[in-house]
Structure formats: C-alpha cells, structure tokens
Length: 333
Image (cartoon, rainbow, N blue to C red):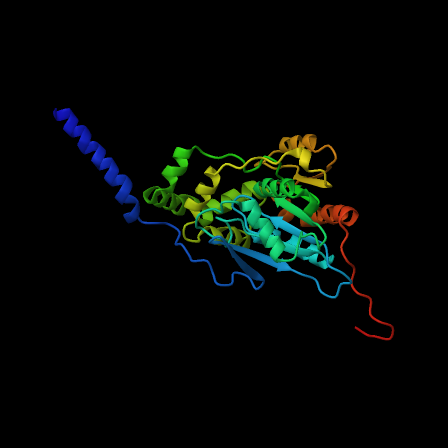
C-alpha cells in the first residue's frame, strides 16, 4: 500500500501547488484599477451589474438628428483603436458611439453579460439611437467586433441602416469552450494562474510591441504600445478575457443581413488573412468589397486616410448624415 500513500501525497502536493502557489508567485506588470475618467468623453452605463464604458462624439448645430455610427473594437482592443476614424466621422457630421466590450478597454472585468447583444442595443437606446422614433444606425466592427456587430444587425435588422466589417467576418468570436473548461477557468486558483502568466509574459511592453508589429506591419510608437497595453493591465483582465473566449457565440445568419454592407480589409493582414474577407464577401454577395493596399490587421490606424476615404464614400451613399445649419440671413456665425 506504500505506492498508494505516495500517490496520495503526490496528489495533495499538486492540489497545494494549484491552489496556493499562484497567490504567492511574483507578478510582472503591475495591475491598475479602472480610472474614474479614462478619457474626457468617457461615459458609463451599468446594466445587470455589468459596467460598460463608452465614448460619444456628437456634432451640434445640425438641422436634424445626425446619422449615428456605433463602433466595436477587436480582440485586445478598445475605443482607442478608432481615434482617427472617430475624428473623421465627427468632422463629416456623424454621431459616433464607441463601446468597450466587457473584459476589454475600461468596461467591466466581472462576469460577462448574460445577453451581450441586448445590452449593446440597450446602450444605443439609452443614447436615443436605433429606436422606432429615430433613424436606424450604422454598425461598424473590427476583427472580433465584426462578429459582434453582425450578430447585433441580425438580431434587429430594422434598426440598422448599414453594416461595416473591418478585417473580420460573420464568424469572428463565435468559438467557445466546453462546460468543463468554463467551470475550471471560473475557479479562483485558475484565475490566479491565468493572471500570473499574462502579467509575466503577455501584458508587457515588449510582447505588446511584438504583437503590434505583426498586426500593423510597421514599428509601433511608444504611444501605440501604451494605448493597447494600459487597458490590459486593469486588474482581472486576463481571466475575464479567457472567460469571454470560452463563452460560445452563434454566428450571424447572412440571410438576415440585407442592409448595405461594406467589407474593408487590409491586403497584408497576417492575423485574419484576405481569404477570410473573400469568404465573408461570398456569404454577402450584395456587399461592397474594398482592399486597402499595404495595410495589415489595423488599417484604420496605419492607413487612416485610405480607410476613412473608403468609409465616408460608402456612408455618403447609403447613410448620409445631416448638414450644418445655414445661418439666418444677415446672421454672422
């Protein structure tokens, strides 16, 4: 029976290592709390204990309600991915709503929302968007966010004026894990192990710079690295991201997406190759297809001028916005 005793000792040692060691191992990158006001235009909504962070750029002095563009970032991203795009849309008199998905940016790191699509639409409704009394909105999603906005559009196609998919197709983010993997990741020691590994090896300036080189196709600046890394250092980020990845999502049905669709893709995307965009195009034969030469996975950042020109050309035809109010006769503005 000695071997059984040794086996028991071994199992107890493994349990001890699993349950205790991650709490005492030194971390790498220090974690931060979510800032009270990450950006001057930051706003918040709490829905069923999920705290959402979003940013709203709203033009004034227009003759009527401006056309709204709701934008959702990709994996590891945040509202900061759309700084240039937001400015270009705002200058063209579009109302721009950028939202951080839970586990990313400065939204919640707690449990994932039971119905993320319903909460996204609720935020839009709270902002007076997409309701029957208002004009339909434009949905734009990048990479993983393309899958999110596709599901939003399929859920309420009557609320959507147009759909824009950037380096992402209808199936982005749909994979999930088994029930057992979800339960295992939900255990506190597992979350501590995930947090330890991420802060030691993933959420570092060096690794972030390496990922951005691959995604952008060029050398990122210190500001680029900071914009991506800072939200990832929020306490609880890594376990929340893993929990999100393991939660399955059904892909949007292409048949429901009858609104105008623009598919924008970087020619040299190493993360989601061009053939994935071509597959999305085949499922949406009525869509418009634009390939940005030389761009990688982040064309809205690295090739902003070409990206914004294509986006505004499409929106100008399918979702024109209000024009600035003309001053009254004799009035000087």
